[in-house]
Length: 356
Ligand SMILES: *Cc1c(COP(=O)(O)O)cnc(C)c1O
Image 1 (tube, rainbow, N blue to C red):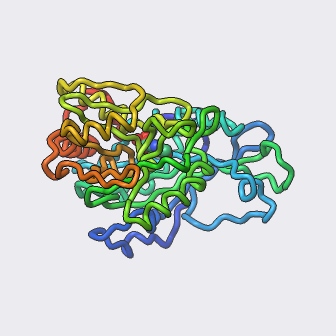
Image 2: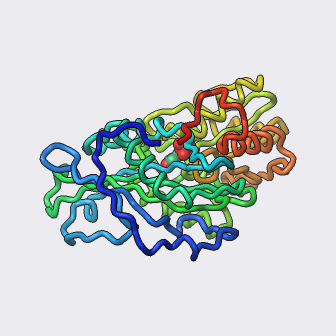
């Protein structure tokens, strides 16, 4: 049951469910959409017109400000469903809070956390059957906000839409990935918007990622924009290295997005007795660790993939092969535990799950 009732959501369910058209055994990431979506408007300084309707196209003026200046933010989260038909969300309040951190940076209105959660739960309750039950599959949820003033002058919009839709998905990466340490282009600069999930960050990262993909690397390891000496993130994931018995990861900053997966991974690692260091990580120490055989493993951490193991790191013209990820003790154990935890099959010892 959905407890809170702040929004007074108008619900119009579709008569043409697409659920039987879905190939549940071959879910492709982000191409199939659940039946319904949540939409609400911001105008005259408040949120209004909360509604859930069928998933459908939006209608806009070509002058709509988001289309020109990119005033837009998003979140990415997942829902799971267990045998007793409970929908399970993993730390959803953290997404709601981060959404508002992004909103502030982009001059957009806050969506109060209880409102965000009510919209989310009401939508998921209606599309409950779309939440996969098979291990490894999940419902990927995309909350986002866009600036909707039909105005081509540059200023923060006065109107916005907050929307949530969802897609049933399978695994994001099915195998480990080769990555390249990027030392020319940058994802984020100090004082910029790197810590926000703001649309423009991703647009700007496409070109360098494409160049790397042409050379056979699946993702970039971003370094600091000033000296390209410090490691920041792996593509759109946080990055974690294991050297000896210690897990090392770049500390969150205004150029690094504070991932919920990363934070959860570190909590679990500490609980399992690993040493954890959140600090500046130099490219040099990672390359040195590969050379002297002390780098045990490396992986990306983010909601879409959960854990993406890295099998090769390219730096400065040289490909460094890492240990075979299929034998990596920590990340394989971690992935199995987190997957099972998110499906409600482990004791919720960290109090991370929201079931309804
Ligand atoms: C979303 C995102 C992450 C991962 O955050 P999670 O909360 O773990 O999903 C990391 N880096 C960037 C740039 C991101 O956009």
